[in-house]
Length: 76
Image 1 (tube, rainbow, N blue to C red):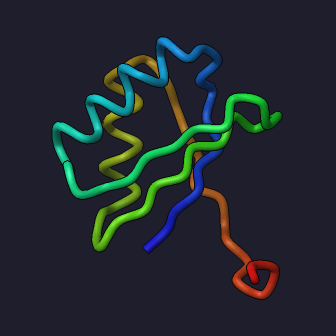
Image 2 (image 1 turned 90 degrees about the vertical axis):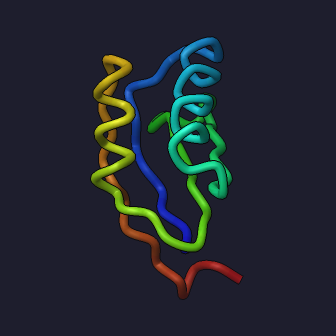
């Protein structure tokens, strides 16, 4: 499963804190950020997780995110 989120995260230091928090809760996930993208994209891969859990983790760190739809026809 892959989910992509638009975030309001701006700095690499914040990314490290957020990734550490998510991985403490769900160590089987792979979390990456693209702060160079205008939407400050966070991509999460894993067998099973809920978008709501990710929203909560970011909210606890003072940030927000919005899940973006993925068009599988564009991948490949």
